[in-house]
Every structure is written in structure tokens, then in C-alpha cells.
Length: 353
Image (tube, rainbow, N blue to C red; front, side):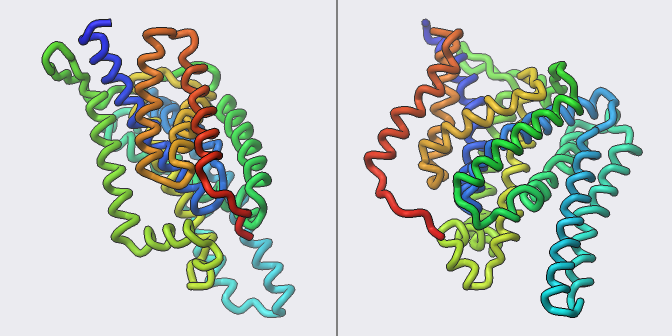
């Protein structure tokens, strides 16, 4: 291996590692706030990429129908909760103030998105507007998924939440096959430019991936350090019971965490779709590599998780050159020593009730 080949592999590793870093941060965020090991994180990558590919091909975005279906289920759950409150209290005071915003968020908004996806000729729009519409369709599935599948079990053990995550993953993979079919898709690159750096040629799409990832990481840092909602998420991550006693609604914090995680997943799919053919089930492996990065940070440290994800991208890139048939084995085997090291060096404590 000469320097030029090593530089090309490093470029590929950094661009894919930047995407894995976003997914690792999303997984750490969701686990810190809700104690959910979010296995379906990769499905948002696949849904984002394949939805944008369908829009560019002039096809109907069936994910908008799934968004509406999730919204209807979530609204029915809100109705059931309101009915239980009415039976317990004997009056309906405040129910209209609760149900009306819930109807707007869970039914009216998905209906508006579905109408927009049906009426607008998306294929003729600029790439940025296509990406914006893709985000508008897929990202709201995050909080709705939390409301339907996770919020009713918010106080359950981590093991129960993990089992739910596995079930949600398989459900989303099956729905992905129904909505997108078994064929893979790519999207139009955001940039066809190339930059010469010595003997290395850097593609514009790879530069876009790294730049957008860095900007998003900086934005997340600002969100957690400077905004009230970000500080509320941090407080919930540190102590859920204490945050609840201080007036922070943990259910709302969970929905916000899932929204951010869905946004990072969909944006990752949009970024890598021009350089990688994605299928309905491709998200699992991609999300699992982000999970490996999150394990480096112990599902708690954002900087270490991002650095670990970048290492995963570089290791995958160089492994594909030296032993392409075993690159996945090499990457996932990395989890074993990291888990052993974490187990030996971390203080063990009982799960917070």
C-alpha cells in the first residue's frame, strides 16, 4: 500500500465515519434520555435515503402514508388516556386543551404533509428542497414512534425496552420492503465537483458529508449548552426522577430526543445515498456500526462516541482493502475488547428506578 492508496482509504473512512458519528450521537442521546437502546436508528437512514430516491424518481412517497398511520394510532392512544382521566376524575376539564394540540400534531400535520407530497412535483424541485421535504416526511415518525411504542413502557426495565426496540426494528424493516421494494436506490449527488489535494482527489460529495456532519455536531453542542430544551434533555439524562421533580416532563423530553435522533438518521441517509446503494434493510448494518461507536463512549459520552465512530469508519475502510471479505467481522469484533474494557473499568450500580 502506497501513500496515495492510504490517502484514498482515509478519505472514504472519514466520510463514512462522519455519518457513523451522527448515528452514534443519536443512539447515545436516546439512551441517555429514555434508556432505550434504539436499534431502529438505522431504519431512519434507509427510510430517508429511499424516500428521497422515490421523490426524485417521480414516485409517490409511501412513507407519508406511514406517517399518517402512526399519527392516527398516537391520537387514538391520546383519546384512550383522556377517557381514563375522565373516568378517574369525573370531569373533562382541560381535555379539549390537551386533545386539540394532540390532534394537530398527530393527525392534521401528517395529513398536510401527505397532501404536500401528493400535490407537489418534487422531481422538478432543487435538491435542497427535495431534502427538506424528505426530512418533513420522515423525521416526524420519530416522536410518533416514541408515543406509540415506547412511552407506554417508559418506566419498564432496559431489557424490556430493548425487546421492544427489536420488535420495532423488524416491523420497520418489513414495512420498508412493502413500501420500497427489494431494489436498491441511489440519489443525485449534492455536488459533482472534485478537489485536488496533492495526489489525492477529494469528491465534492465526500466534502459535503464531512462538512454537514461537523456543522450538525456543532449545532448539537450549542443546543445542549445554550437552549432551555437542551438543558432539560441533559437534566433528564442525568437524573430522570430529579428532572421530573423539577417540573421537566420526561415524556416530552423523550419525544424531543426521538425527534433529534430521527433527524440525524434521515440526514445521514440523505448524505450517503448518492455514494452508496441503499436497500430497505441496509439501515441495520449502518446503525449497528453507529452503535459500535456509541459503545466506545459507554452510551454516555458524546465526544468519545463520535471519536469511536470515526475509528469504525477508518477501520472499515482499511479492512475493505486488506481483507474485504472480513471487513464486517473485523469491525464488529472490535466491540468485544471495548466491552471487556468498559466492564473492568466502570463502576457498577443498580438501575435507577
